[in-house]
Structures are given as structure tokens and as C-alpha cells.
Image 1 (cartoon, helix red, strand yellow):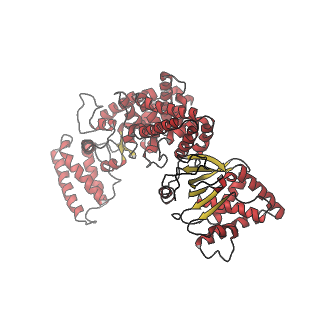
Image 2: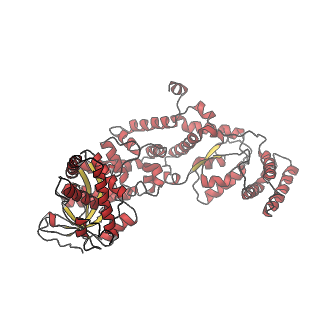
Length: 594
């Protein structure tokens, strides 16, 4: 039952979200576990793990996960308040059992400063006090409460004799009252609790750092000015809305922009993480849960307005970079290549635009880490990841030179691969359906190669392809084998090139989405050109430099053979690559020095 009209004895404002850190010893009142929740279900390992964590904290500040509550009614004092316990039932019940155990079995403490009641079990309060064995099989809830108490007893028994156990209980009691905290998250009295419970538990969506920070910030600001709190709430929504613009989000989030929001279910989390990292050196590897909240909580307590100004300033900076295509493109490339947006934002502090631009150029140079001489020999076999990065940079730089923003929002969606502009063999094709598609595609373009081979040779191959396609369709596996396909595909490929040596260098590579790459695999230039044009006409995203390659954009004006990828074409393409990448290439002396 909601009680929105709190009695006059209730002096706390319960109309908005409230958030604070509370030590276990500061929890007061009666907590009702509503009937939309299942009962207590922690097993012995869960209980033992919690005890170990608390004891091993050794009195240092230690935060447990949030407890989400809603005021049901106010009593004459805080001890008499009644709360609906929306989330955190398992933790709060286990802590209660630990405190009650120490009260009964050691010389430490007076028990838990709060009480618990399960709405589905009217006598649950009584059983929590007795935990007797005869009753523990009456209900599944009682059974798990009884087993948890046994796990607590087993944990203490392993600590030594009565004197040792009392000593440990004294320490544990002190930790619980002085340093072990919960994140107390109180929702407004008018908010539906059951819906929030479903989100947090049934949907397995925990409270985010951003939600906790927002509650702490507004709670702090509301103490001085309700109007200012409302203004900050509106600014918060504006930042969230801005970061939902695909082109803005893609360049600051990089690879995280396409993870179904697992890392950033709320977009403002990224600038909050950035501010936290500027406040304190972040941990290496994956952040602990609620690391950002724990880091920024103290900042909010010290000066909420100052903290919020940092967030607003970072948001403004992001929008400013978005309006400068060259800066936008450089930052976007670095973030897409794995750099931390937070690190880049920190480096920008106090730098003039020209100095910051120079820093970005040097950072890109360090990222690709290659000279022009090394670029000539960088091969698909040993340098695949670097080739991907270099061709992405080529596309980004091409876009920058037109004064436009690179479409990171489209680039970060698909998985990318290196496409051989001209393939020398089709040996990797092993399935009959692959043979069928390959032969059909090449049959379409055979007429354009009459100039490189005799008409009779082309007609003979066309006739053999038709025969092969009929045989494949008959599903007679013995009539057309992998050996037959290999021989026929080599005859087709030799019409385009007599060079049987595979070419895995950058002058024969282009960037293409893996899904589209599968259509082009091991095809000659003209087949690929036709498919690229088809994809482009259909509105599929084809990187600008890949499209340019197959439109012969980089070829000399007097170049012949529009349907072939010749040595001259490779030479012109490599020259264009070097021209675009030159600001970021190291010279030989720099490379040698490193």
C-alpha cells in the first residue's frame, strides 16, 4: 500500500529519488518483502562469500550493491518507519541473520537495528527470531533461512575456539557498523515499485552508475534549491538525448557504439566515466561494478555544483568537436582503433586548437606506426590487423579532405575485412553452391575479356561453364568434383591475368564489410566491380576508397583496360594511399630510432 501523504512526524522528503551510502549499523525501520518477490534463496556458498568479503575488508570502506526501497509509512521515529524492500532482499536478510547470530552466540552486539517481514509469510518475523529446526521444513522460505544460519555457524566454528570467535565477532560487528556500507536508493512514494522490481530482477537489469549518480546529485542539490535540481534534471536529459544522435555517439564510443548498449545502457555513462577517470587513476582492465559511482560520490558530496560543471563542460566539448570535421575524424579514428576517449579528452585540457590537432596527428602516427618503405611490403599474411587500420585511416582522411565528417555510425556496425581487389585463385571455395555462384558471376562478364584472349578461347570456356552448371544442378557429386572446379576456375582467371603469384600487398587490398565480402570472395576484378556498383545502388554502405578503387578513380587519365586491375593500377593506387597517409607515416630515421 502506498502512503503518499506522509504524517507530520516524517521530516524526510520522499517526493524524489534519494541516494546515500549507509553503514549497516545505520539501517533502521521495518522492511517488508512484498508478495511480488520470491522468498529468501541464498545458499551456503553465497552466505560464506559475503562473510569472507566483509571480514577481509579489514575495516576499510567496503560497498555492497544497492538496496532499493520505497517508504510505506512513517513512524514516530526512524526506527518505526516501514519500507517496501524492492531490491536487495537477499543481502539485507543475510546481514540480519549474521547480526542476530552474533547476538545469540557471541558477546558482540545487540542484533540487527532493523526488522524484516515477508508479506507472503505472516509468521516470518517470528521464524527469523527462532530459526528452529522443527519448523524449517514447513515452507521453502524457512528452509533456506535455516540453512543460511547453519552456514553462518559453520563459518564461525572454523575460526577457532570461543575466545577466537568472540574476537572475530567483535571485529565483524565493528566493520558492519563503521565501514561496510550499502548504496541506499530510495524511490519516490508515487512510483510503481513492482515495475521497477521486474526491471531489476526478472529482466536482470541492475541499477547503473548513471542512475545512482543522478539520484545522489539531485538529492544533494535539492537540499539547497528545488529549482536548481529541476534545471540539472533537464540538462541531464539534454545530454542523454544529444548522445543518442548516432553520429555523435559513434565517434566518442568507438567499438562500444555497437554492443547493444551493454556497456552504456545510458549514454551519459560515458562522460561520467570520463570525469571519474580525470578524478582518479582508473583501474586496469574491467571496471568493478559501481566504480564510477563510488569515485564520483565523494565529489558530489564535496561540491555538487562543481561536479556538474565538469559534466556540462565535457558535453559542450563533445558538441564542439562534432562541429569540426577534421578534429571529429581524427578523434573518431583513434577511438575506433581502441584509444580511450577519456584519455583524449584529458589531453585536450589547456591546449589550443592547433596544439590539440598536432597531438591527435602524433597519436595517429604512433597508432599506425609504419614508414612508407614498410608500407610497400606489408602483407595480408602477417599484417592483417594493421592493414585494416591503415585502410580505415585512408577512408577517414579522404573524407576529411572534402571537409565532411566520416560516417563512423555506419562503419562501426558491420565487421570489416580485407578484400583482394583482384583474386588469383578460387581454391578456398569447397562447396557446390559456392562453385555455382562463382561460375554464374564470371559467366556474366566473360564478354569483356575477349580483347585479352581469342574469341574461340572465351567461347570454349563459356560452353564449359554452362555444362558445369547443369552438372552441379544434377547433384551428381562424381560428375563435377573439386578438381574439376579448380581446373575450370583457373582457365577463367587466366583470361584476366597470366600472373599466378598471389598478391597480398596493400596495393591489392580494399576495405569491405564481411557480409558483402562473402559475395566477392575469389572473384576477378570485373565481377567485384559489378557487385560493388550493385551494393552502392542499393544503398549499402561501401567505404569511399573501396568504391573509388572499383570505379578506377585512382587510375591515370589515359589508362586502358577498365575491366582489369593491372600493375599500373596497383602503382597508382599505392601512390594515392601514400599521399593520404603521409602526414601520419614515420620516416625511416624515426622507425630505426625506435
